[in-house]
Image (cartoon, rainbow, N blue to C red; front, side):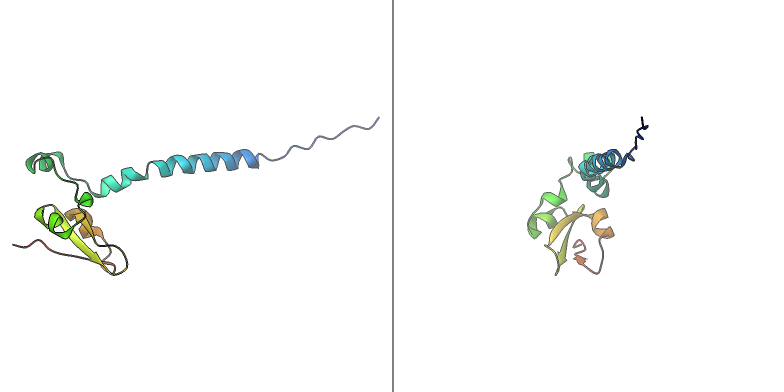
Length: 103
């Protein structure tokens, strides 16, 4: 009687499944990173009346009404958008041109 040899396959499918599930969990929390870029301290939000979300403002006039916190940024490659002043400062200058608040 011949002895049967059992071959053990490497756990590649299990490792692949683990990597895919981990990457799904990481990408699900990517909205949190966007919120960090638009961070405004609680004291300033309270002082400014709760703070409007600059990214929710779709028109230039509404964005510039909140000139203390929001900047209207133009782009030839992407849509023009309203950003918080801190976030507008970090945008690539090769792509976006942000208007300074009028005095």
